Image (cartoon, rainbow, N blue to C red; front, top):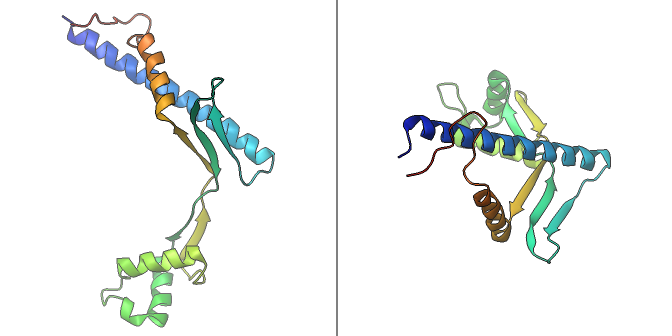
Length: 159
């Protein structure tokens, strides 16, 4: 029978193991993004294929997402009031659906950036998509290691 302390130690070790893997993966992603940017690539992508020809997945570089957000409610309200008075509530707010439409149109470039709105582009990011084959291999590797533990903590014996 596993004690509560042993179960807690397993939970802690699992969380630490997971966090370490996420941290390592994030570091690799940052390095690849820096490499892509250093080499001036605007389109980049790789299919990851094993020695035996198994497709493990793909890695794609994506430009940062462009979005618009309201930075000055009063300025935007004045702008919408002049151009679209029926879209302004009498409690001086812009209807949420219309605000979304304006922000989407600003991002699309079909409406000029009105006062009180700022367009910003997010940082580039990677999309990593493992295939079921890669997931199964990773699971086999994890299963082969047994339950994660940390030195000095009880590993738990199962039930």
